[in-house]
Length: 248
Ligand code: ADP
Image 1 (spheres, rainbow, N blue to C red):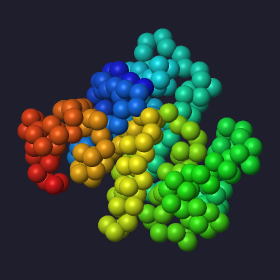
Image 2 (cartoon, protein in one colour):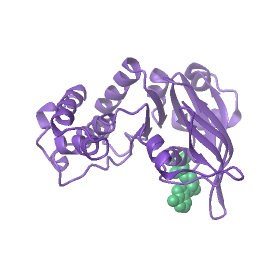
Image 3 (cartoon, rainbow, N blue to C red):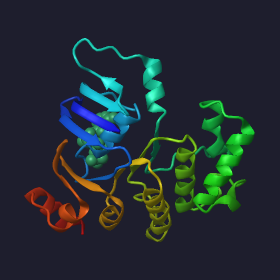
Image 4 (spheres, rainbow, N blue to C red):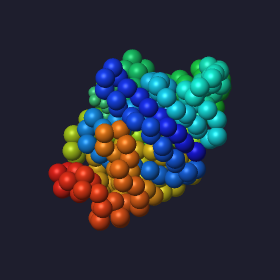
């Protein structure tokens, strides 16, 4: 579903990703762990076309999203179509503060997918039920707790019916007592949907519970990858052992 081949990305002299090869199978739930600044978020931002790679090829569901190989040309319209199959939940919710919860969830389906307001509204109510927030439909984001806002952000991403969902440290801006409710929603999604999920997380126990595979990332490269029980309980690489000792 997701494939990175030889992907490189630098910001000036900072070589964030180096010849990265990475694949995620359809329906697979993959967690990326690793130290801060190692390039984890950059992977998600490339998939959202918020950054462009310098080298390599990124494909989603067999279609090129980025192609920096010699002589390759990318069709912007096609890229936008591929990009639309991906949803992302950010660390800082990024909801529209002046709009109600319901409008936040219906906006893109209406404007981007051309769904009717009725259909988008109906679907939004279902999704807000799924994340336990149907009672808050007419509230503005500022009237909700951080955990509730993040659950709205999840509903909003799901409203676009993505094939792939990206989660970028979605609990790291939350007070500790609000983390559980957000993780519970993601855990339900992981266990009940066929969506492909790629998560950057510092919640090791959560990663262990919901992932098919964990990738340990350091300095722009995957240094160890495998089932969560292996990577988190019995890491082979010295860097992974050191990282886990520091965070657990
Ligand atoms: P992680 O998610 O593992 O913490 P990031 O992917 O956010 O790491 O960042 C990797 C490196 O790239 C960091 O050194 C960061 O400062 C740098 N970086 C990320 N985005 C930008 C940007 N837009 N401009 C300049 N440097 C950036």
